[in-house]
Amino acid sequence: QVQLVESGGGSVQSGGSRRLSCVASGYRINKNCVGWFRQAPGKEREGVAFIVRDAITTYADSVKGRFTISQDNAKNTHYLQMNSLKPEDTAMYYCATTLYETCSGAWYGWGQGTQVTVSS
Image (tube, rainbow, N blue to C red):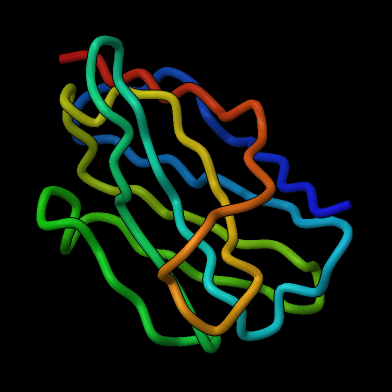
């Protein structure tokens, strides 16, 4: 069973940093696409960062230059390094995978998420 567990959230002041982790079980992450998503209260879920084939990354315009997605195959884990955080980054953050070397299609392994709260 594919499962992804997010951690690393918390409260941080504007301008601060936070690193989120996404530990996968039930499959090997290898080159499969993984995405980080977030959802703020009253808003739609949005994709913020994606990685596929170990190194091809895509970012939402709102986080470009501030967030970095990476992976450690040995630990079967993905990371989202978030720098220069803004109050508008406040949201529940989730990771998910397509299980394939493409970031289109269905997403699997949704976990409970990890809350990031940025205060001004």
